[in-house]
Image 1 (tube, helix red, strand yellow):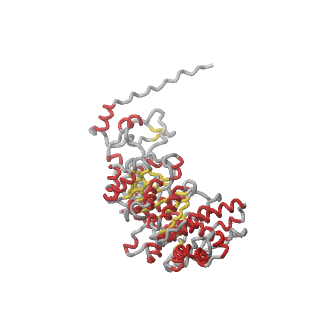
Image 2 (cartoon, rainbow, N blue to C red):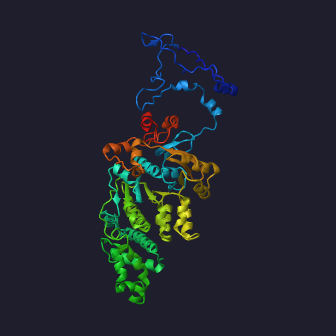
Image 3 (cartoon, rainbow, N blue to C red):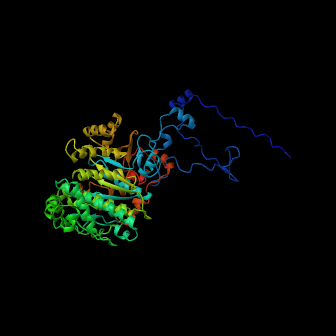
Length: 582
């Protein structure tokens, strides 16, 4: 039995002192500008050995195969100057570099979700996934709020987030596209948006039953009673909010009358196996011509007392039938939404000619309808999941009165339970002050909505608006300077603030296809660019989408100094994109 000789233990090299490291990192005299290992190739002997090489003479398997300036092909990282000749090349261990540069650190956001851009402070890629942030304890709710002046990139940031979250199974619903800014995205994805307003044949019943009609026969009696109570309460809140928008504050008795009329019209009191569709004109007719058993059930002395009491709310709801919104929300729904599509939108840009109040009423109807539809559709279905609900210019809806503000407040508070990511888009914090009189309950609730949005996306603002945001969100002087300085220097620059965490300077990066699709200035140029709508465009928007691989951060950090737009959809900057930019 032979005993193998003791293996010689390799002696660890002594670490260099701080003085030696500083001298080698600061003294450039005598340091060669050629990268190490750039000696001319030695002839290769027979058997795959290199003469004059290291001991054993075998070839290294990790020899550099690319030239110093990179491959001369588009998108392969070619540079006009050899990178090794721009600055000296230093070598040090991780422990030594950490001692010399101890303050270099990432932003703390995990590499999970949609890759939206890069952090300009650390150079690393920036990923967004609000629900994962909640599960990891980084925030308390998944809601987001976006502030920014016009032209600073609010819409492109929101659309890029929606588009890239599709790969993670997150669908989106634009509950009222006031300016039609999201329509090009839907057309590029092959989806037809639903337009309401002048010249559109689409009609939306604000009291539509939606999927509840198909589910009704499959539910037991207890489940039917529970769902009917919920949908009746939602309809009652909607009608009272619409009445308040006409200048009449409904009373508790009015709410009881509406709930009773709705239950009678839908067929719940007669024990029907199927529910009947109802519309707002039918509700108005039952209030104007009440049956005898109706006013008796509601404990009115006689029919005249019932009519006198319900006249204000009857007239308020009648304005929806004969006013500027006549024919939009008082007829049966004549379209079907494809709930399997990754995004759906309600385009209200055609309503601008009917006034701000018409848009506000439409937003209220759409908010209630879409919330009810998504709740029922996502209830235990195979395709149920997290959904982003975009509320663009939500302050218009909240101007209708207290109940409209309470409806938005309720949706934000129930976002986690309902598996929704509520995304509010506004210009400035003072938008919330315009929902009511100073010191009113409406303004108080509206200001508290910011506390229900854990993630704040703050794009470029003026100094005055920056002061408002600093007071409302508790920004530091440094964060406020970023908001009014750096963020104003280009579109897509934003200060991302997750609750009380320090703000992050994030640059949203768009590909050429995305820039063409999200172009909100096309109308100013006079020649509207038609967004791509072929399968090739769809693949360009989605196939190279975001990743959740933290290994790509180093590549992105290397290219982080380039301006916005010089990147693919996944945020990786490329030379062909730079060439196209020039």
